[in-house]
Length: 310
Image 1 (cartoon, helix red, strand yellow):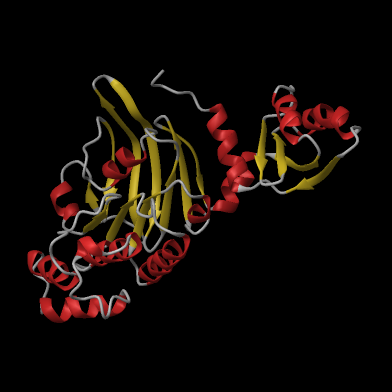
Image 2 (cartoon, rainbow, N blue to C red; image 1 turned 90 degrees about the horizontal axis):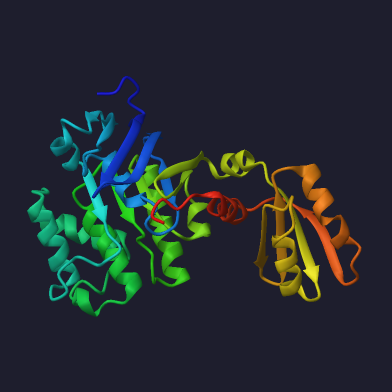
């Protein structure tokens, strides 16, 4: 086991290539027990590959570390016994009922008293009254809830969620995340990949990966502070035309629409002030200093990331 039992994942220098192309390069991180750790980044950035290496589901070409106290290279089979994995695609039996799916999973993993355990999970997930409904007939939100129940039924120590709320309505997403936080409060460690900023802000810690490179990690507040962005909100007339002008102005590192306004940011405060000075004189534009948002940070990181697939 690791020297610190509160550190569930401790890895260094993880690198992975497929067909001669590096998809994850030199990733190092620690994840504490009971943490909800979010992975963000563009499609094809290496998020899923990283998560699979962290928990022993995929062997790295380089690097080493432990997960749940086991070596990710030599003890992967022992790690897998304690991991629950929920994919974006619903993977339970569509022609079995909610109850039948849960009882099957309970028996498959030799869970004691499978019928009672499945019934308790139905109650916990708010599926009472839907026990005999076919899984294939459930809405997206209810399918998601059932899938979460199935992968946590064997009482794993680590839960992997690969974009679990894609295509689910906001109410169902909020309920799903409330359940995730309850599980984490009970000591379950959660690794989740997501594209939603509101979900990232619900994580205890986040990592942004772009084209295989880990660009930043930490709490949301830490990631925003590390960005060193200085931000203004701009509202007024002809914002679309102003947006194009701002984006081409040296000293401005990020300009993007946010609702009925623009966010304009730069990492060099003095250079940013010089860049926006001419625009401040324009009639019809209102400038206001603002705190950078997590989305500001990610847009900036994305703009600076190098696409290794080009």
